[in-house]
Amino acid sequence: MNNIVAGILVALAGMFGIALQAEAQAWPTKPIRFVVAFAPGGPADIAARLVGQKLSEYLGQQIVVDNRGGAGGNIGATAVAKSAPDGYTALVTTTAFAVNVSLFSNPGYDAERDFIPVVAVASQPNLIVVNARVPAKTLSEYLAQVKGTKIVFASPGSGTAPHLTGENLLRVLAKLDATAVHFRGAGPAVAAVIAGEPEIGSMAVAAPLPYLKSGRLRALGVSSAKRLAILPDVPTFVELGYPSIQDYTWIGVFLPAGTPVPIVQRLNEALNRAAHSPDVRERLQAQALEPVGGTPQQFAEYVKAEVAKWAKVVQETGSKPD
Image 1 (cartoon, rainbow, N blue to C red):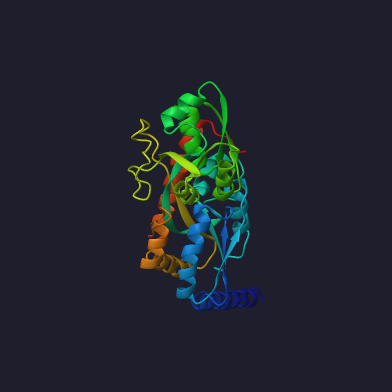
Image 2: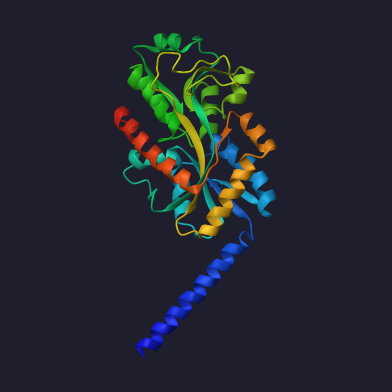
């Protein structure tokens, strides 16, 4: 009897495996949901929408962008971690994914166990921006202007790379009495600085870029290794005497753990193709987003290195979740 039961279980397992393999080969047969872990208007949202349009052409299915902002990206990540591993729900998030491992004692998910890294889609540096009504025209002028006072700066969320860039520059290196006020993404953070509440913010380039061009915001420094072609007059923090600040906000796509390998591979290939297609590349670069790409294995190794890097920054800055 036991042998019969065991044989039935083996047969059922085999049938289930065949069904999963067939489903993976047919994927996708319905729309794919991109859960963006931040509010509209930020780099993750912009990249998801630009790449998603082209991706839908390649895969023959609609890409639905679902913004789930809050808790520095943890709300969206937790939602995807709990979703079915069938390739129809993916997480689009930023460097915050790697930061939150050390910033939060319990972000609501296990970054290594609950996700499969698919690909880094794009990357861009961070900016310190001020409301155009601020008298200071340079970073040194601003630091002198506020020295000895208490300031708050806008961040797109607790644990984001811009949050820690701001903490590191303003509080640790410049030794200001500075406190971050966190928003549900770069879009709301930019809107707050435009309104002067607060007058300064730290965020990735894409969201404030239109307002820098229109003159409503002013950039005091950028965290890239060299100046950006799109913002040639904005000095790097390296030029300004802060060589340790070379930070980037990357945008990556993750699938829930357990997603079949063929689906992971097909989504990776389609995302690489979409991000590097001439028209999407041009539109990304117009937002100061540089296409990245690569294999799932390369992205997994990069995320692991980023976790270690940002754990050190969290420790050095003494940053705490909001």
